[in-house]
Structure formats: C-alpha cells, structure tokens
Length: 187
Image (cartoon, rainbow, N blue to C red; front, top):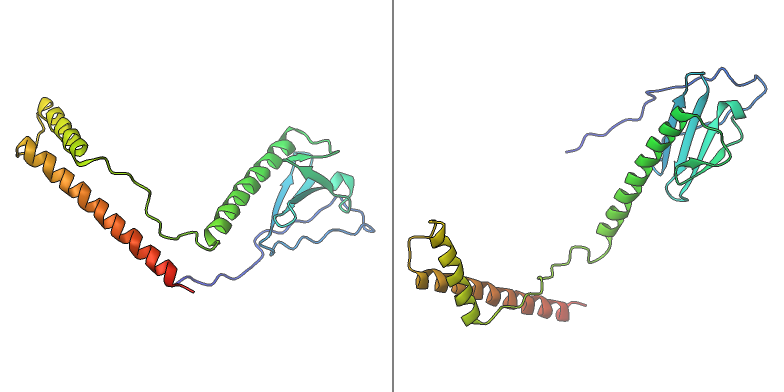
C-alpha cells in the first residue's frame, strides 16, 4: 500500500533585488501540470523558470528585469533575454526535464487509451511441414558440427520440433477464433 505524502515547503527563496514598491510574483509549485526551476548566478541575480504542460508554454523571470515582466521560452531558449553561460546551461537542464516529462506523459496517455492492451496474436505464417523438417535437419547438422547435438537422431530432432511448432500454430489459430467469437458476442 502506497504511503500518502504530505506537501511541505522544502525550499524558500528571498530576493534582495526587488524594490519595496515592486510587487513580486507568487509561484505556487503545487500544480502537477507545471514545472518550476530556480537559479541564482554568481552575481546573485535570480531566475525562475516555469513551464505549463497543458498550454506548452514556458516563461523565465529575471530579477534584473523586474519580477513582473517574464520572458517567453521556446525550445529551451529565452526570447529577448541576454543570458550568460551558466544561465543557458541551467535553462537547458530545465528544458531537458520538460522534454522527458512530455514524452512520459505522451506514453502514459497512449497506454490509457481504450484497446491499448487488447490481446492480439502476432500474425504468423507457418512454412509448409516439409520446409520445417528441412530447417530443423539443417539446425541438427549445424549442432553436430559444433559438437552440441542433442542425444537423439536427426529425424527425432526434426520431427519433434516441427510437431511442437505446428502445435503452437494450432493453439494460436484456436485462440484467434476464440477472440473473434468473443468480439462478435460483445455489445
């Protein structure tokens, strides 16, 4: 049984670059459909990156630009923002997480689609019986050459495998017929 997790603040940031009259954005990180990243460079400039998975839009806030004027981020690049090397590396790391999460969400959505796990036997064509016997005979000859042949004759080996393969083919056909009957009877 999974344990319930409680939400608690584990990281809180204060800014010293805002003026007293400047209103600051409030980032509520509890929304699971949003990604948040924080960075502070060597000059104590602060950066907050957000990405909304539903709208597929990203923004970056720079303390040096004033907290209420976000810059749009497209494909991991901040538009109209002069970022240094460390800020670009941080933003790229954030973007890599977003790309991976979007891929995970896409796969998860596909798995939740109806009929995602519908049992369908793989289409298989079985070669004629004579060809199966010949192939198994060739396999037996190859095993003889490398001194790993089973303790039986070539005929027993070839016919044993072909009977097994043909048995599996009959089971698959029976299973396919059963699925077709069940699908015909379903509302």
